View 1 (tube, rainbow, N blue to C red):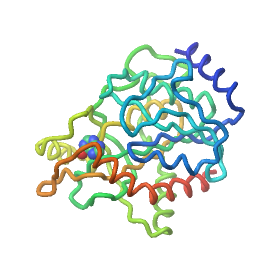
View 2 (spheres, rainbow, N blue to C red):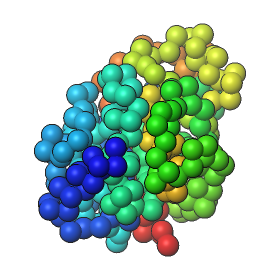
View 3 (cartoon, rainbow, N blue to C red):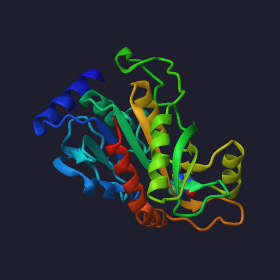
Length: 270
Ligand code: HPA
């Protein structure tokens, strides 16, 4: 794994001399934030040695290096999901690479189903904590170079970043929730009974991503910030027929406000 990472990094260094401080992983329908990046280099996943290549609609596969909010960033346009059949070490490989490129902060976005009855379609939710119902990405051979074998998971979503984001949302007059994101395999959306179960165990939103990347980033000492766009509701009486296209449309509509928050938050990083 370490040799593979070295090979990937040495290829990337040949394409760009930008050394990013911030990593971005953008979710379904939320890739437009990369248009705000003053791009220095754009590299297709298929050209990067050892990188997986994404297959799902709405997940274009590119690594974008540039400036955003006055900081050097690297953005993944398109992420890898467990439901596509990737292994956990493949899903999280780009995060390992970003760490070795030098990132200190990781921003993650996703589309998710809201199970908190106070939520409405199109709302934003800052991820305060998660419940992981996917396999843990740290299962398997341990590399001490990455961090602890048994990492503590306290403050996985940086409280400092959460507080700053809340203040930014208030200043911009953007309605924002905080809550617990539960990661599940998908690709089927939930039954009514499953949405009810997720609410009972303490979830506010449910989705199919973000947590594997966050666990790996946290193990390596990266400060994480996650934000969900609520694209549909898993709330009794409000459950509607859901399609991937609907999820993409709603995410697109909420993208602007999410982008404003992330940009200001990156500006405010110290
Ligand atoms: N469930 C799981 N994942 C999702 C949902 C959902 O309702 N909406 C968007 N991603």
